[in-house]
Amino acid sequence: MQQALPTLRLLSFSAAMLAATAALASSHREAPFITTAPKVDASDFYMFMSYEQGRGDYVTLIANYLPLQDAYGGPNYFSLDPNALYEIHLDTNGDAKEDITFQFRFKNKLNSIALTIGDKSVAIPLIQAGTISEPRAAALNVNESFTLDIVRGDRRSGQRQSVTNASSGASSFDKPVDNIGKKTIANYEAYAAKHIYSVNIPGCAMPGKVFVGQRKDPFAVNLGTIFDLVNAPVSVITDPTLIGAVPNQLDDKNVTTLALEVHKSCLASANEPVIGGWTTASLRQARVLDPAPKPGHQNTDKAGGAWVQVSRLGMPLVNEVVIGLPDKDRFNSSKPKDDAQFANYVTNPTLPALIETVLAIPGTAPKNLPRTDLVTAFLTGIKGVNQPAHVVASEMLRLNTNIAPVPFAQQNRLGIVGNILAGGKDNAGFPNGRRPKDDVVDVALVAVMGGLCMANGDNDALGFGASCKPANVPLGATSLKLHDAVDQATVPLLGSFPYLYTPVGGTN
Image (cartoon, rainbow, N blue to C red; front, side, top):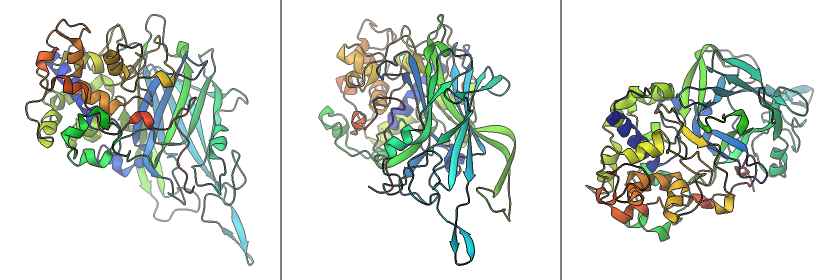
């Protein structure tokens, strides 16, 4: 997005971006095309300073794909697409363009395990022929693996180099099979841990880590209720004692995680500690279906041509509830530097009007137009916290790598908003990056309905703008109490890389 974009358009763009996160803050099946290609559907993106003890100078990047996995989804389960390109992009100077890209490519090798039945050798119908406890176990009928490259500069024309295993020097890594169940994999946590690799990253003096595999979905939300016109009483979602009153509808779902841990010196400079990040997935431009595929694994389609981006995710849920239905696929194919093309949807956003209508609370939108508080917090970053010195307004997560991580137990689930309210010391959370514990739904509800202006007071104490003050917040103090009745802080997580919890198994 160009810096010359008129102020009003910037402000409306930011407001709409934040309003989007208020509805769900995750991205499942958000555009027409992506519903037909679930293997390249990005559901969540996290970027935070590692809070594992002794790893505080590292940045953790997590991109989740293929959402809403049922643990019992055999016999093929949820391998990623070998005809796709999965990427994590980083903007290291604030110009809304990628400077570093990590590229993941996948390979699924069929081992053609067969049994002798009478005098015939017959291929088995499953992806496993017995128990599994090690990578590339003999009982695995399909071996999943991936390569990881780093590209400096433009994602297609920049310098590309292979990330390699720090122990073996290999450029190919094994991916664990999904959590089929206890009989197949008795200790999935131990099995998956064997697929966490220490890696050498070209141009980086410090080794990093990588893990790709199935994880329990870390996001908590009352999914059906939200899309059923926010079918919840206002009295419930404004009562803080009812946080956690309803179950997390994603509690039994899994995702596939692409996780990286990289030393901050490899990503940020001394002159600019703030990095921006987003994830994308691309497919080949052409696909031909073979009416008589040869024996093998995924031989029906033949892909070719240039890469075409079909999925994009930085700040949560922008495409799901802000961009109009005719342009959702277009947004998924776009880049942050071109975000001005969607200005019509955000200068006149439909979501605030929808919220007032479905909750029957007319006249409750904040009056501090233009919304400088939301611009500061969500489009450019907060000055002195996570705003680059030469920022170009655009949609992505932004993280200040100089702000130290906070141990898990001390993390405020409302991130910076909660820190402001509590007068605490946790500036390491959303929207300064995003940690798995951050309750981005509640943060966004508070902010979009004026909570930041309540905290800003009458003297612009937090620098959100002179009109961002309590008098312009119709909900008053109630804006600080908003929540979705699901408690993100109770979702089980790990205390170390890759942080996301062991996936739900097909059997107990």
